[in-house]
Image 1 (cartoon, protein in one colour):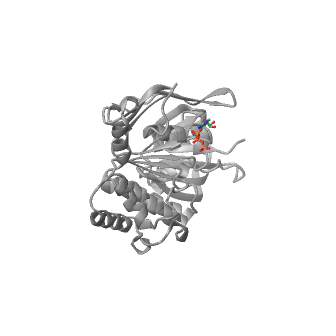
Image 2 (image 1 turned 60 degrees about the horizontal axis):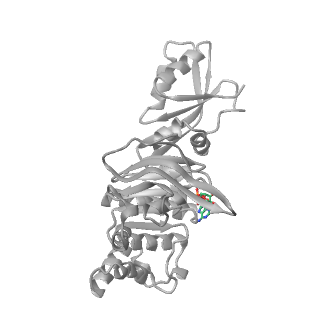
Image 3 (image 1 turned 180 degrees about the vertical axis):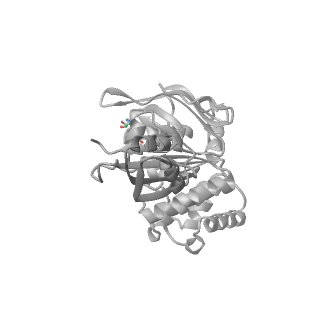
Length: 339
Ligand SMILES: Nc1ncnc2c1ncn2[C@@H]1O[C@H](COP(=O)(O)OP(=O)(O)OP(=O)(O)O)[C@@H](O)[C@H]1O
């Protein structure tokens, strides 16, 4: 079974966590022996297909769920030992946002945020109002403070939920499918905001998603869940470009280019990570060889850690295999069309 190495900078640790549920008389492990460390200040993705245990995992982090076996630690403290007061303090320091926003429909955006401060017993009515206005301003919603949730778009509602989650200055933000109900433009806005909050406030962000595209854009590391087990965990580029599990391969397929089948016999897809200058790499690969190339298409995208690109290239000539070997030696992944 995969296990994340213990990291002394860990702010969240799962130690042999199993969570079983009884459903229709049968016992099922939603999570099965998961070991994981999440470091302070990172954006950590949890990805996996439907039913793989993602929501159960994130809900264990603020004790909305409890493990059947093993333990969950936050800042080295085992959550199972917390009394009601300590648990409440922990939850104030851990903001959470959801797919369904969870706003109170009878309260305005401003009141939704001040309410979180009231519940925590923080400040005076005036100071709470000012903090809530500042937070709504930070998430780009100053003009909408007096609106009710029903008067806001999905992306705006999620921004209110983020302002509310930040009200008590948490160290950790938990995001459970926070963009799944949003259109692509609103998704983009929320992901940009999440990345800014991580950078500006040093927030540790744990983000559950079923979309590798979300992981690609904002995460530093990602854990892949498969039937409740940790299939693999690593830097996003590692899981994306060199997945070691079947579940990891299935997920990365969605954002990697398809093999160049049908494009032509000599066509290959080249994928690279980092600042490889393609024209240089290709020219160097064929230099002095009887091989020539023509670029059929190309695209550059970005991970949090840097750019990556892929292109479809027609490579021909007697030394074609040698030219492709040179590209591989430079760290370029080469996929040939199926014969
Ligand atoms: N309260 C519960 N009672 C019974 N079974 C549960 C409960 N919560 C989760 N499960 C089961 O545990 C498994 C994992 O569920 P979980 O919601 O954690 O998965 P998920 O990866 O978040 O799925 P999705 O992407 O569909 O939300 C599923 O088979 C689910 O039916």
